[in-house]
Length: 305
Ligand code: XMP
Image 1 (cartoon, rainbow, N blue to C red):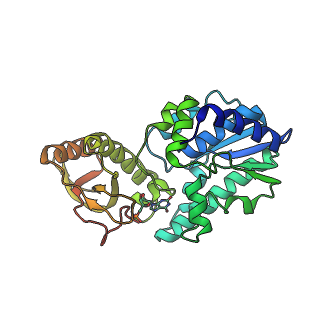
Image 2 (image 1 turned 30 degrees about the horizontal axis):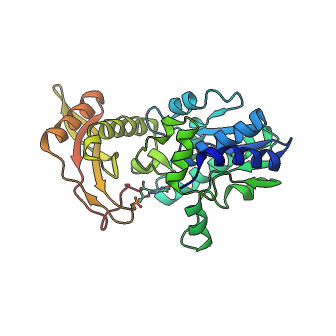
Image 3 (image 1 turned 120 degrees about the vertical axis):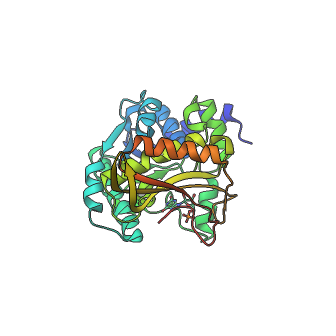
């Protein structure tokens, strides 16, 4: 295990030696790896570091506010409100892979602009040891390795936690008093809620998905799922008051998994499912019904797109 007492000052010294008087940027996702890398780099070079958090509008409830609270002490923190630009770019797009591609491209565009404005020569990344092994071994290309560095011409890439495993990064986070990011949230896909609304991404569908995901995470915490989520999967007829309405269908999903490669749908008791249904339909007039997904992976995937 990492000795945080020596790791932290050594890492800070190293970052300072590498970056010197230059400027640096880091893309903050709110995850523990980028949070720790940002905290170490900020300790080392202060406001020469611009931590950039891009609010895509596809985040979970409270996510952006959480970032603002946690990193409030960094004067140079940039929270980029890019919601409208992401929604505009996604308008009319229904193909799942096209949606992913547009989101990735838009993210790079946002980050590139911020890096240029910050006059950054260095890119700090929260790459951890398993990311490097997976990329070097060709198992999968990891978003922390490659990708971003190609778009802006940086003098160097600084990876302060590159030799650590996830649990060691958590130890360092605790040592740095980053308790908020240590609490393990469920995995959340890079394209965010866009893969939890089937078809075109609209404000209305995102709002339903965001609220429903919040309800599901809240109600299913005691089941300790690998992932619990809700998705807007289409429209169906319902009755609200005295009227027949054509409203959204929300699918609730809760799975157990070891690594996300395969998954088992969880058995949830009826009262809990009914409570979820009643909270989602009660607070969203435009939701006509709530269903529970009993499909394992395979044949289904965990997300809906
Ligand atoms: P699927 O839906 O393929 O998901 O069974 C397996 C795991 O990967 C996450 N996931 C993604 N993560 N970008 C990500 O960073 C993506 O495009 C993406 N798609 C799925 C999903 O949440 C689950 O944990």
